[in-house]
Structures are given as structure tokens and as C-alpha cells.
Length: 355
Image (cartoon, rainbow, N blue to C red; front, side, top):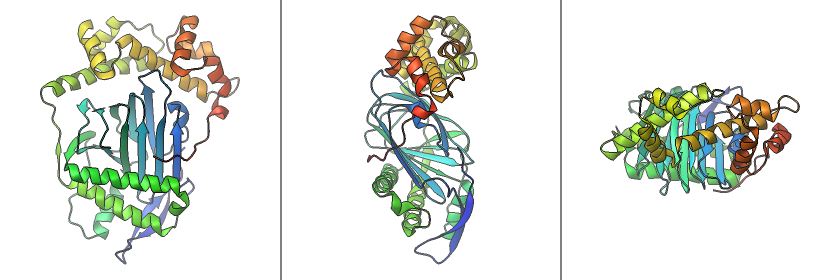
């Protein structure tokens, strides 16, 4: 759901000048939730699209806090499992992502490291593999609002739009400061959401601090270029992406490993090693899990009487329904028919949790 955006003025507490920016006033200022099902958690999110898939068959306990300020939106994420994520900001928003001190994994095939900053132009998807203990802060903001902020503060910083998804090396202390600033804001908002209601002065002060910290982090950055083993890992990541795209495009076909090799232009051995290195799973195991997640999402979103389990299973290439049901229950802890009965009405409401 995307809310209609209105216009209002934000005052810098240290400056008498005002800046007119866009807001989404009919949406809650704070959304905080514990996530046990990615498909359920992504229902109704307005500022980004996220396609997430767990790579471990264990109970998911992830957390998300979204704080909608006036010129920016802050999103805190944490997870207890290894997860593959594709995410992109919507509605013309730039995305800046930085990571917690214990975060491990990869972005676009590059290893997560201290000082890493991911920048994505509007409507461009970034690919992440994140490990247990992962934390991140994303700041979503319109390019025009950054320009207005720089003008308001009489800053001479040169603002440059990213091209696609850029993985940058920032000054590590500045990147850590940005993460701490965003996480502190998320914790405060989760504990006291009323303080961030539209029109409250705390919102303006928090936003000024956030944008100042963001601009300080992006001021001196270099593009991270893969070398040595990391160059190989990025190639592995690209091969997995090509195979995944083929399966999603031809989801009802009987896909063989040989078809994936042709699509990625690699040998079966290279395909196997690429999937193992990137996801920890074999090609067949990973892509089966991907298709199971797609069936799960379809069943969860279905209105009563609108579909059947067999229809959605066959749509995603599961022709042996007995094998499908057993794999589905192992992956999600319930039968596909139970998911279908839950439907949209069974999606649990968001609940406030503290990071």
C-alpha cells in the first residue's frame, strides 16, 4: 500500500529557515514488529519491496522498525537466520544502507565489512545474503529532499545520484556513527512511538541529526572493487542470480540442472560450486526452497475460495503433490492447506518489540 503524500514545512531547530518536504501523514509514524514469516511481514509495507527467503529450516525471529520522518524514512532490520534478500526502495526514494558491528554476509557478491555503505538509486534492487546476528540501518530519502536540506544548511556538498546499486567504502567511524544514530532512533521510536507522531518537534530534531550524520558518512567514499577471492565470489553471485532469474521467469516448467547451466553459460561443476559458495545449498535445494516460498506467498495472500493448493503447487513446478506437501511442511512448519486456511486474515498484526 502506498499512501498519498502531502506537503508540510520542517523547521531546523538551529535555523529559522524552513524546508517544504513531502510526508505520508495517513500512515503510522512508527511500525515495529517481530517477524516470524517474511511473506506475512511484507504485507502493507509502503516504502520498499522486499523478497526474502530463509536459507535455514529453523524458526525465524527477525525484527523490523520503520520510522517515517518527514524527509526520510529509517528502517532497522535484524535476523537470527541466514537469509537471502532482494530489496528495493519505492516511490522515487534513494536507499542508503549501513551495517551493525557484528553483521556478516555479502552485498552484490561483496563481503560485508566495516565502513561499507550501500547506495541504490530509486527502484533499483540490491541483493543481500545475511547471516545470523545481522543488523542494518537503511535510510530512504528523495534526492530533491537531500538537495533542499543542503541548501537549507548552506552546505556546499556536491550531491551525486548513484548509478544502479553502488557498494562503497566509507570512513569506518562515520559509518558506525550512522548505524548508531539510526538504531538509537529506532529503539526510541519503538519504545515511545507517540514522540514521533506527525507534528511533534522531536521528529524535526531527529531528522536533522540523521541527515547530518548520513551526509557526513557519504562525503568521503570510494567504490569497493573486488580483488582475488572476492572477484571469484562475485562471479559466483552473478551465476546464482542468472539461474534464479530463469527459474522465476519459467516457474511452471520442469527445470533441469542442465537448463540452468545453459542459462548461466557454465559447467555443472561451476554451477554447483557457485550455489554452495553463495547460499550454502546445492542448486536443486536452493531453487526448490525458492519455489516453495513463492507457493507460500501465494497461499498466504489468497482470498477464501480463490485458489487451491494443487493449483499453486503446479504453477510453481511441483508436479508430485505428496513430495511437495512434505517439503512444504518441513520448510514452514505447517501444511499448505493450513496456510491457505489462514489466508490474509491469518496474518498476525505487527507488535512493538525492542531491538
